[in-house]
Length: 258
Ligand code: NAD
Ligand code: 0WE
Image 1: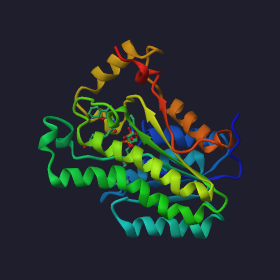
Image 2 (image 1 turned 120 degrees about the vertical axis):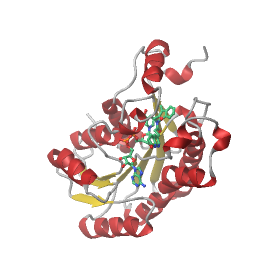
Image 3 (image 1 turned 135 degrees about the vertical axis):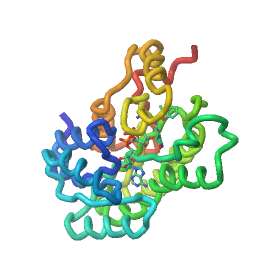
């Protein structure tokens, strides 16, 4: 069993009980980590209530709003962490967003604004959060982000998100190179398709999941908990020699050519 006792872990990207970040939070907690949770605030406070109730059993010692498009919210989050925790050990970046109209139709129709939004939220945020976490990772640390095959190969309709994930995976390498001297490791997990709030809003996701169930070596898709286990491994001392990598947690789908 992995042991993360005494480790402080900040988890971003929990929206509901289907979120990949929720699978990761549960497994980090099971390994003994002390959790901090951030959520995307909305005007009506719906996310806050839902996420607060969901994570309550994991007793996070930090629970804060953090829209990654807002530098002030990011700074406030890390100032609060600096006050409450002696250090950060683990940062989970598990968020993405593109305008829905940019996830179907011709990729060449992507607007300037749509392109900018997708890369700001889904790509730049990793670098911005890593920069904020760096001075608080006093004993080194582990940063894990979530990516998808659509950043490496063409997946119909993934479109601008594919460009965002390609940039995210390259950000993992540049960040790993820079932060290695501070004993901070940076890795990505490329998850196979999972039914979540984000993916369910995508037309044809069930057909894609069905395809993976027929073609992947394990003849199934993966669960949020399996992704959570891989993330927990990458955050543990068992992975102390691993940085700058993208680990596929996809039931083997990525190796198939035909
Ligand atoms: P999800 O909808 O549960 O999670 C996405 C999260 O992004 C939500 O919690 C949402 O609040 C957050 N978010 C969006 N805009 C934000 C902003 N401006 N500031 C802060 N947070 C913001 O869906 P998910 O599928 O669990 O997605 C999590 C990650 O996993 C994403 O990076 C996604 O690309 C990746 N991923 C998902 C799949 C899949 O099939 N579901 C596969 C591979 C990778
Ligand atoms: O990264 C993702 C989800 C990305 C996503 C999804 C949405 C839908 C709702 C980002 N932004 C939004 N914005 C919305 O308004 N995945 C890996 C899941 C996913 O999304 C796809 C997929 C798969 C798989 C989009 C097209 C094709 C396949």
